[in-house]
Amino acid sequence: MMQLYWSPRSRSFTALWLMEETGKPYERVLTDISTGAQKKAEYLAINPMGKVPALKDGEATLAEAAAERYPDAKLAPPLGDSSRAKYLYWLFFAPGCVEPAMVQIATKIEMNPVAAGWGEAQRVFDVLDVALAKGPWILGENFSAADIAIGSALNFCVRLFKMVPSRPSFEAYLARCVARPAFQRAEKIAAG
Ligand SMILES: N[C@@H](CCC(=O)N[C@@H](CS)C(=O)NCC(=O)O)C(=O)O
Image 1 (cartoon, helix red, strand yellow):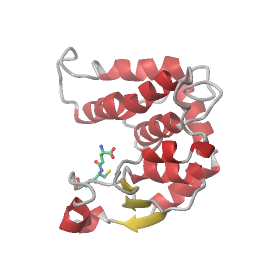
Image 2 (cartoon, protein in one colour):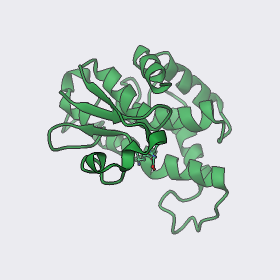
Image 3 (tube, helix red, strand yellow):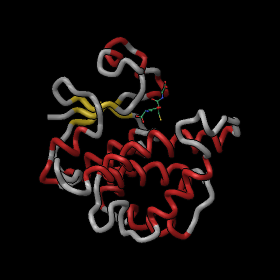
């Protein structure tokens, strides 16, 4: 069985939501970052970054693995599907662009947008605004793990911490995310 190392009120929420969407059994291993558990040797052997979440699935330790591991959960378009490229694009857009953009907005650190991989922070949210305008999901009709990545990031910076101003497209999209039973279960667990 997969083991999810998690801590309350942290980015573990994304992995919890993903696991809850699969509907498959998994073991939660509490790794409370407020106690420094993430820096202990036994955890560093699982994730040398000393960060949560981490998902142990045999040799692999990355959360998105669950989307591929449980194909019947239909959280990832299969190899060869025409929506696969867009799926991967948005899956990486969340940690590669949305996350650094929200940190930049919160910290007001100035960066040369040509050198920063995410470009201008504001533009990241403009791009998302257009991508989410039609819906219901980032790939259109089909919900996927890319929605978990994008939805978790927006949930954090728009809905919970209001670091980034909301927009009608974000409101509607977040309402659809929040309405999912797996999101609600994950939110309860993540509250600790
Ligand atoms: N890129 C990682 C970031 C994970 C991360 O920063 N986790 C924070 C909690 S939200 C953490 O473990 N902090 C504890 C520490 O840095 O000691 C991911 O998205 O999984």
